[in-house]
Image (cartoon, rainbow, N blue to C red):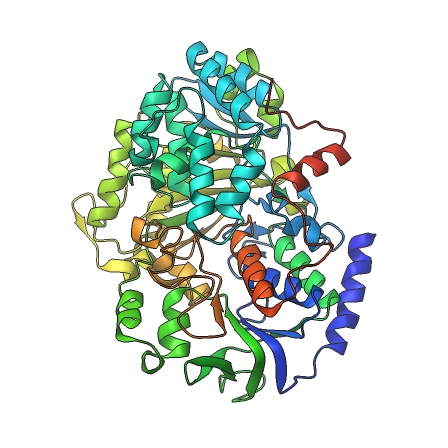
Length: 588
C-alpha cells in the first residue's frame, strides 16, 4: 500500500517539478545512484538542486528490466545491494521512500566440486564460525579471533576508510586499528591479498572466498596494500558487508527510492537531458549546456554554487570540461585513466525451479538445511588459490577464461524475492569475469570488443556447461535466457567506458587519495566549484561516493552541520535487523 501511495505522490511531484529554471544552487550531471544521493543530501540541507540525466530513466547500472518476457525482472547490473551499510539509508529515508531489502539468514558461499562449501551468515558471525568448522577448525578459530577483535572497531574502521574523504589521518587511523589486531602480520599493508590470506588461514577453500569477492569488486588481491586490505575486509562479508541482499521488486528500487527522496526534498530531475558541456570560466565551473538532443535543446543552465559530475573521469574532464580548460598534466592523467579492470559477461536465466547446487547436500548435513532455500549469491571457478592465475592471464592477454571464472557472482534472485518473476518461475544471473578487449578464446583469434556480438550465445553455452558441473539442474530447469556482454554495458551507459562495472580499475594509481588521478583531490577537482563522485575506490551500492561528495560539498557551502546528518555506517543495518526481530552478532 505504501509503495502505491509513494508512486502516486511521486507523479504529483514530477508534475510540479517540470519547469526548467535558468539557475540553480547546485547542478548534478548524471542521475546514477551516487548522483541522486548527492542531490538529495544538498536539497535536504536547503540548496536548490537540479539533476540532468541522459537516459529517460535514472539509475543507470542499477536497472531491472523485462528483457525476456513480461513479469520477469532482470537486474542487469547491480545485484548484490548494500545501501543499508551507508548512513544514507537512514539520512535520506530510503525505506520510507519505497526501498525494502530482501535477504535470508545465509547469504553468500563458495561451493567446490568435491561437494564442500564455504558459507557466510548474513548477520551472526558465530553461525559462520560453526559453518567454517566443518571446513577447517583452525581457520574457524582464526575467524572467531578476528571477529572478536574487530567487533569493537568495525564501525570506526568502516567510517574512516569508506565514509570520509580520502586523507592521511583517516587512513592512518584505519591502518592502526588493523595493525593492533592480535596475529596480524606487522607488514600486512605491504602484502598482497594472497600473502595475507596465506598468513591468516590454512585451508585453500577458506582463503579463496574473500579473494574471489575482492576480484569481483575490482579490488584486485595481487596489488600490495589494496589486495591485503580488501581481502581482509571481505573475510567479514555478511556480518559487515551485507552484500547478499536484493530489493523487493528488483535492483531498480534502489535508484527509485533515492529519486523519490530527492524529489521530496525539492530536487528537480530532468531525464532525457544529456549535458553537452560544463561551462568553465576563469578556471571555475559556472553551469552546463544541454545537448541539442535534449528535451530542452541547447539550453544553458547556470550553477550559483557548484556543479557535480556523476560520470566517470573521461566523460567528465575530456568531453564536458574539455582539454582547453585543463592543465596539460591533468589531460594526460585522464587520458591514461584505466577504465577496464575486469568486465562482466552475464547470462541471465529464467528457470522453472531454483538453481540447485550439488553442495547443498553437504550444507544440509553439516551446516543448515536453510542454506538450500535462502542462499542468494556464490562464486565458482578456480578450485585453488593458484588457479586464480588464469584470471590474471586473461586480463593481461585479452583471453576469454575457459573454463569460465564466475567471479561476479551467481545470484538467485527469487530465492529471497519471489516478486521478481511470476509464480513457478525463478531468475538467476551467471556473472562471469572477463576482459573487455577480447583477443583470444583458446586458439581462436578474436577482434576486440566487437567480437562480443559474435560469440555471446556461444560463450553463454560454455558458461552454462561449466555451471552444470556445480548445479546439474541448470539444463533441465531452463526456460529462457538473455545474455549481456561488457560491450552492452557501454551501449547502455556511455560513461562506463570499456565495460567497467565500478567506474574504472582500482590500481595503486587510482585508489583512495589517488582516485581518479593523483593530485585531483576528489571529490574536489582542479576546476573550482566542480566536484566528482569518482572518489576513493570503485563505485558500488554502499553509496560511499555519493555520501563523501555530498559531505565535502556541504562543508564547502557551510551547510554540513545538520541535526539529521549524524548516522554512522553499519548502524542502519543493525537497526534494520532489530526491526525484523534479528540480532547482529560479531563478537561471540
